[in-house]
Image (cartoon, rainbow over all chains, first blue to last red; front, side, top):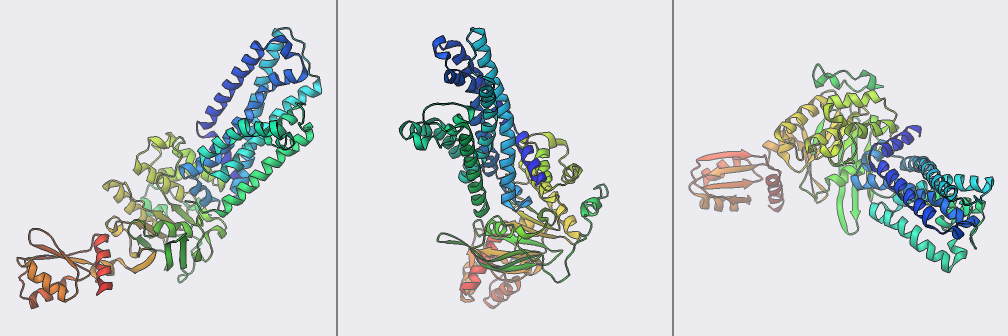
Length: 244
Length: 324
């Protein structure tokens, strides 16, 4: 198992895909943090959730972590390396579990980099503009650790989704459309259901207190459930389906 | 572990492949297909296919494109599940082998690489998965003569280099059996010769090779027996000599009286085609037979050549025989 895990980590490190995702993440978080931190009018940066909105821009890392997880599975199907992978390890569930683990580890790195960057830039903007920092220590810790944990879990969600769909394009479009469009609509119209979606569970985990959101701990558990359920479904399907 | 016994290639490839230590008994087949069948919706890709491969043989697995060769290999290797029947290696399904990469090496497609990954990293990620030492990666790179470009990304490789990289991956675990799907595809003549020498050296150490191709000529000088399938069914199972000299061949005849010979062949139910410049090709027959028929029909023969090099002609011959 450790060998398979190391193999999956090597797959992540040995192409430029990961570096591209990290660069994209850093660029996007810098852009959004600076725009929000510098252009938002002071009265809109006073309340706790306003400041969370700025400081948690780093949680965008979750999307990139999901993309890395998706790539870890779908690029193997796309380029056919899934064949030698399964020939060397015919116990396909071992491959997928190792991938989910590698996705979580990669996601942790994404979460640390993205979370620290978003928080750092946001904090600097508030301090530079002389705005009082409203979060207490517990809330700050929740925001930072929540971002790292949430982003790590998105890595496993990406692996699961990739294994279920196999098509790179479908999985990428699927996760973006769900996270940025479908789930927001669901939360807007059916908040009781929408808050159980992975993005809103992550919002809760980070400490947002918007109406209808879960508490932080249940939010974290819901996100864990998503990661586990999608990984298991992906593992089951990968083990059952023929490889072309 | 046979890995440690692997010798350097300096003395030629023969020494690189010592006899496998875990050889099965002499009569036990290494590869066995039992009534193997694969159905995709309404299409039967592989139809009740049975065969056995003995240890130490090089077998050509032949058939036109779409005959079911790749599907059969995928079932042997556990990548696709048979609709019915069994595919066994060393008496068990591939997925149930304890360390499959150390017993069976396979290359299914020469394009199964991430274009942005280096050749060395491709091998390393596979070696890591089965906990082979990194030195083994360097050994197989040397074996397939890819040390120099190993750090380059695969997208810069020629097709021949990709074929060899695939082979290197298959050899990582120092397997007893090699299964190669169309390994000569896209190789230049030098590459084909290199592959032939390589496989001969490999099989000389009592190892077993199954190599598929849709062109008999590509593997004719490498294999010692052939399995020919068409429409998913086994058509011929024979040694190469039998195939080349036997009824499955074609005969090219040059005669000033092609029409008269044609009539005689038609009476004998031999399929043939008439080319330009007084030549005629008869399928599924032998030179002796054609000579006798021509003599009896009073047809002068200026040239008579047995040809068995084209798989397509053999197929035509086989169908002609079945029709007769």
